[in-house]
Picture 1 (cartoon, rainbow, N blue to C red):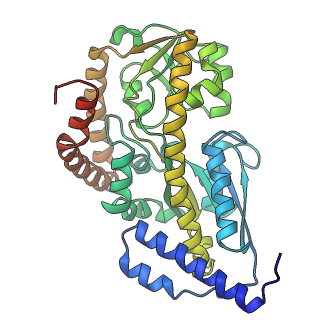
Picture 2 (cartoon, rainbow, N blue to C red):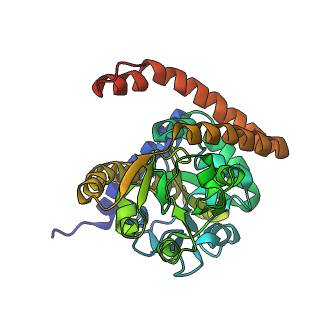
Length: 380
């Protein structure tokens, strides 16, 4: 390999970093920021920063954990090795559900999960994860990045010295795995189900014992009867978890998670202590992870849904219309209650709702009509 002089290396490296910074700023629609970061120069090009990321996912978890490692690799490459990130699965350093606290306290610099995991600590954060019968992945990205959602997200996490960024989306999920038929609302009564977030609150109001169980514990709990049902993500991850071996029914659609945003948490103080170019590189890599994760899930779910169908080990069923209708009603009640109890949650709910209504109207001219036409369904 040809030797490169230090001067040429730094010149080349600075150009790459500036390009990454512009991408990050443009991804947020911040043209003025884009102009500003073009001139950003590494303040200490020789210093190496070593950060750690904890996640809510089991170690080496496909796509979601893999995306975190991809992001770390992109950061290291774009920074010329100046920022290195060690990615740790749930339980390797801290318990999965303590990731937010670890980032907030500064024990680690980064975390990855989804905002509804912190519902007990930050109820308003759930809107940045998913809302039952709410927006899909495309609409969530639009609201967060271009509709004012990011500013509200920053406001929610400000007291905890944390910033959250969209780092992927599951798309519309499946409704879950059940070991009993769901033919009516009565069949939900007393059901023990792993379902977190707002969906869990809705199910609780419907008579379900809703539980928030870390991913690595779900299979055993379902196998032993501690759980009667579980939602997880979609066909790819569900199959990899082996749920088709221990549950009889696979229900759809995922009314509870129509577009679940995954997040990367960053300790705000630590972020601001980085040189400006490394800040921009990190955020750019997170945005890249956002698109990569959604794309991977869409591709893999297509493949593994066909696999589940072809193997014929489970019955795939839609939720009864009566059940969906009642869950929708309960969802409105739950959201109204959250908004009434917390002024910040109310502010976020109003922003979310306004954007959702607008997006749904637009979809009436585009997405909804298009999908109906290509499926042969003429109803609009």
